[in-house]
Length: 427
Image 1: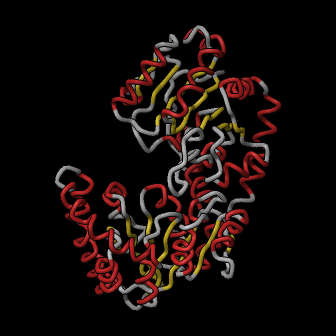
Image 2: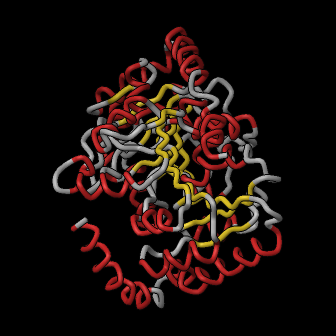
Image 3: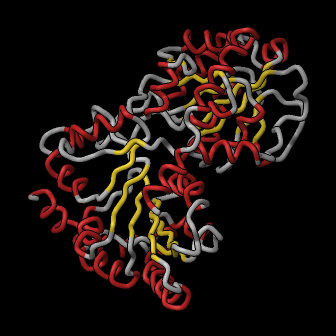
């Protein structure tokens, strides 16, 4: 409780700073101008169109969390439940504020006592469902005071998280104890939650991201970046950042010593997708590739010429690009931990869904499916450039590739159907 009182005291002090910076930040300005306006519109929608239905607020921080909600939202009986979507990110709010998957969409307010009180007072929901990580302590407490059922879905907690260490464990135990239900993707994660909440039932439902990814795969119409792909293998470096550069470019230098000429000889093409797509990052990657005698093209230039290397300098298409690839290196696995373990390898579900040879760095403890894939022999942790090259050589082993594809299919088949389980606990 002491940590919560400190939290409650500090939070209002930050509000004037956010207001000041909103004059310089487009995203903060959007939040400042639209948060309470959007909540007001959502309230009016409830008053006019509820028709006796129970109100459920589904909260997703940003696009990634919203994607996890999509297969669940499709299963909600709209004649019985009135759905409100709340977002923290202005980007996803602007993109999804007219979505047909909900009856109303609004911003989620900052986590102050007065704001959380007004949020639940205005919308008067029956349930408040939070996806994965975006947990606001005061809102959870206020929901309890308003007798609103609270559920955390796709909940993630890894074994070395600071949430499980003194002195943070007491605060986090108090916060998570206020949830009515915690639904986790796996028994490994459930075991970690049991360390935090030894006397609470943690429910294993699976991860809805697998259902959503398989749906996206079936409806993927993303064209190939390259025009000449017959007889060619494609390696994609997905969501990479600076911590990945040394190993990637050392491996490329050794495996393709003559740059473009080596790529052509080995009939391999490269796609580089940085996690950040600002000009500085793109220019840096272009410079490093040119240093290896490779001439990359930028995806934004829309040139489907016979190039060997493409850099994706836009966001939102990585998950669909895996369709046209054979091997994926997923970035972030050499990153350092942040305070609550939000750093590490990025999503590995998408390349797995397309049955690619998939490798990544050693920092995988925050991502349960990355650990599972290693245990199942369908994901490969690399420590250095030599091990990355070993993964590259798998491209020439058709028997090994076919065996991997079958093992991935078997793994994925066990992961499907979690959305139905989750929706049953909510509705």
